[in-house]
Image 1: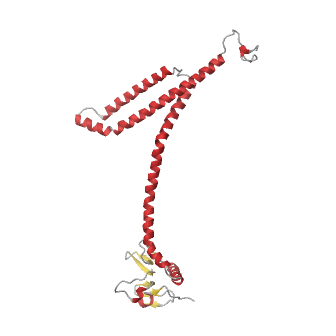
Image 2: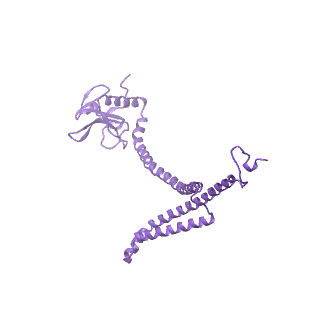
Image 3: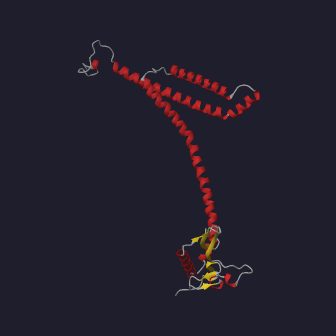
Length: 274
């Protein structure tokens, strides 16, 4: 090969003195600086992690340090911190010198600086991810379990309480269930509001009286029969009560108005419409 001395490119390269090619030397130097930069970066990353752990340990023990200095009456936590920082700086300088002795590199080389930065950042990021991932997973699991526990328990209790009303309504015949629907529609047509029924009590409709600061009921739906002593006979059946005001009752199915005998105990299991 007649042009080996110019790397087989005689139109661009010349070799006036027959010296060794600088191309391969330059490639070798780039590779060397990149490798050494990576090693330096790994070492600096490890030292950075150690410094972070050491700082965390220092601040965790700072209350004990404060108590110690208070009892002794000398020194302070800030003096300890300055000493701590000086120790870390000396340790870092020792580590960098040890790396330079083990991997003598040109610290001004762009290749060295680039690979050192990448390796250092990657080391710290990988370590942080490995340490933080299980903590984050445990935190998410704990938060999910505790955030969901209260709503689930509240929903379970609420369902148990509301089931008393709904189960009684579901136990009615189709006639009784249809009558409940009719009564609800009638109450809505009057513009009345349904009182929250978190305890599974009779379903109550009416309006809030601002002047008296109380809820004036206008319709009560009681799908569960009552058997307490002292109640009227009409209370022993599923029933409803409807009124326009105190003393003026109405039967929404027939339109009759009057006393409690008209709208005080309206049977739910009666067929009012054919």
